[in-house]
Image (tube, rainbow, N blue to C red):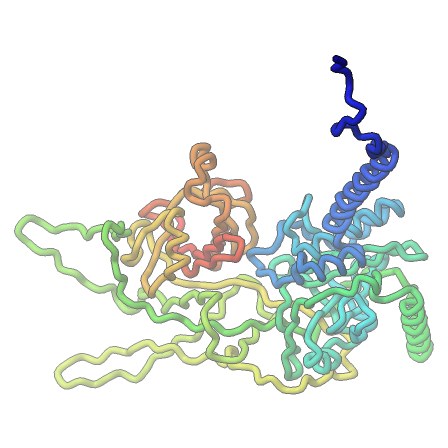
Length: 548
């Protein structure tokens, strides 16, 4: 019997499907395309996020909500920078080539757009005296779409031209046109002006033109007119308009018109024709009309008895000396002639304002406090007692509020006017070591609790060791000195705490880099603690101790 294969095999597949071949070439091309797309997206993200000064990058970042509008800075919290006069600004940018100048301009614009959060080096600030030669209103075709821009010439160096920006709301443009007139002198000082350079350009004749914007965005008024206008940070920038704001053709027409006016004026008076670009060696006369910066008046808080928490330390004054054993020492008040004048209470910068504005005139010398006059009031007659004159403070007329009225243009005969801001300075009562009033003594580790709950009307003192980061005429910026273990364990928050110390008139702030130690005998008095959105603490204190 044959057990061979059956003629019919059910497992035999005579019609099996042919196996498909894998197209490795197509898969390779697809993978390479996806890899190239991922690499292009990666490089494009670097291109967009690292170069926000480009118009297309700025537009994309705005749509993605990845960029913040320019913000207003405070004088004591401005970015670290260097103050350059016209000669120093000219020397910095005149030696740069075309590629180097383009790279410097990109970095200047990038820092301004990022609100100076990642700055390499120091921010250049403008100081000096400049004369306005032309002004015009900003519009949709400019980088800054609202406000005014002034074209100025440096008084000390004719090779430097500056266009100074005044961003503001459209409602304030009318007042600005009447205030920012041709011939007005712009005076920028390092004590109270923070105007940063955001662009520099070399002109065809070899001069340097810079663009500057004030980071404080303050309020201004004129001394010989009424009206106040306030600057505002722009909500967005039109970078497609390009720098500078005064284009070459417009600037050439302005300078030609000024040259014709000078020649006509010189011919009518018989004086020699001035040469453009050469500054006069004589010192210009003082300005008769000035544009001054105004600040909101701060209310003086009423002092209340300190409320002491449990385990809080007191900065106790020195105890009075005891008399002989068994006898009490008789306390006598000093004679009226040797009593000090009533102190002027330091104002807190963040308090609400009961009046519209208080004008700080630029004619007042810096660091000179405005102390109200003290007059003698009529004596109170009480039967059976002696009468004594009572000192009262007469109201100072200089602190009257300025009404917001339409600004009046400066007189035509005034050719030398100035633009300046108010300088700081103050005076208050100081005490010997250990003899200040009672109050709560805290360290830098308790500042965040004070920032959350406030001072609550009590007197709070600050102690600790600090390092001076910045020092000027009457202010200093300190940082808490932290140890290595504190830095590793993040104790105290020293890296995110800034102490702004205000000194009274006649005091010399410590130099930059010095170490300051304050204990319970010589603390600082805290006036306000502010906490920013990024966690930065700004502690405002003042010096109340007398020098050793």
